[in-house]
Image (cartoon, rainbow, N blue to C red; front, side, top):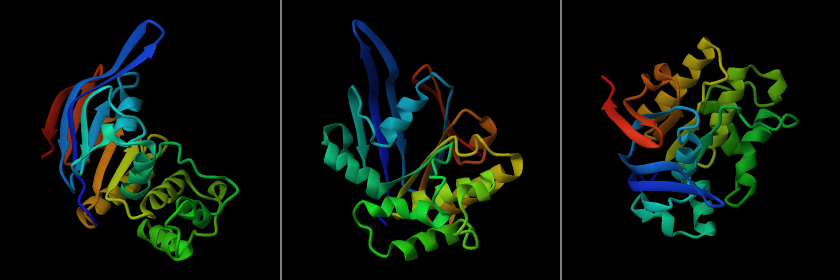
Length: 228
């Protein structure tokens, strides 16, 4: 697996609505090395979605540079951005985003339907085993607890063997026990499997379970510290 290195250099993102400009990110400079586990604390309406979209190559900066493994994301076309999202980044969502009529196995197979989809069943089974759900492959989301649904979401993020896991409030809808289980899986992916894990959250308790916490306010980085 190719190491992941993220570097934001003076990244600014401005949205224009008619004559009005809204600065969602302002001069953000952050470097995340391969195999780090990092939490980015961002309050709602303070650039959280924009930060997720930039890091996930769903959007590009208005100014500044985003280098992913040395490649300047802001200079890439849509096809290359889609390729990066499909191959290098696994997304985990707060609301799971599972299709209710599909089994856990079929939900995890979905990313493999669009290119590079050989051995879909085997790869999906392996991903579900990695999150401890080998015995739930035939269950639909309504037959699973919230924690189990999120673990299916993590398996779906892993099925393409990304180097980065980018999680948006991954425990936001979970009880305390399920939160501990999900965080343990993310820690294991980082520490044992060598994935770069980035969690964007507004919860300090979740951030404290990582090795580094970056705090943002009003679109700017205001603190960047290692967790002891």
